[in-house]
Amino acid sequence: MANKYIKYVSLTVTILAVAFVTIFTFAKNENNISDTKIIGSKSFDETAFRIKINSIDEILKFADLVAIGKVIDDGKTVETEFPLPGGESQAKKLKAMYPNINTKMEVTHTNVQIEKVIYGSSPTTDIITVGQMGQAGNDEGETKIKREQKVLLILKKHPGTDNLYSSVDAENGLFKIEKNSKVISFSDNEAVSKYDNNNVDILVNDITNGLKKQKK
Image (cartoon, rainbow, N blue to C red; front, side):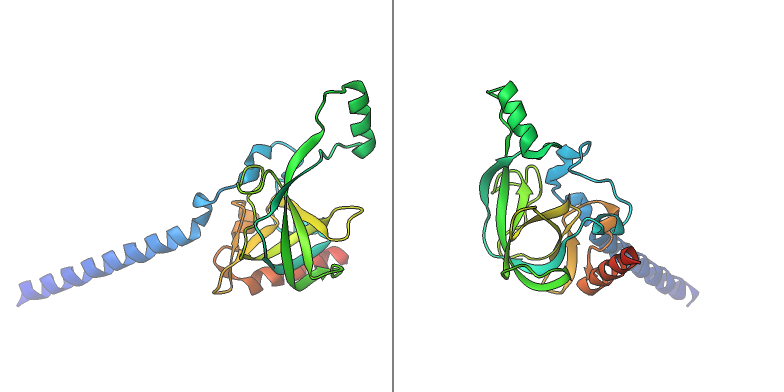
């Protein structure tokens, strides 16, 4: 009788141990989504294109628009002047000094239909263009938003344009919203990837509170 009881207890402990390991492994994999992310802007780690942040509040101060929307096309590659510190005037000086110099760079322009404005002035139309580093069709330069994705975007407006924006800080300002309303950051930075698999309302609440603090 005692032997049967010991065997029963041993079997129960074994089953519980296996269940615990399975649940722990699943939870760990869910929390390590960042390990499988493609971060296209990592080549710019040591430049001004990527800001090393410790909290989402640090990029909100650059935001002109925070919005939820749906990506409605595949994006197209366009050429634009490289953002030199002196702007267009510096580009002209460089071309005068070095006629063969190329001051242009390739970026992707993708259209997003705005569904909800969380912060900032509403665009003049419900469709905005989001500019990202690198050619359309690949994630080099910056991981691209893609057709049919529902996204939450933290954006800055391009001066002198009506509806052209870009992320305040490459992937750090981009979030995909899944069908179950959970978000996945495009970035592996802990300051924003901590929202992975959380409901979008948690992210929106933190953004709203962060913006309120900056206005005080």
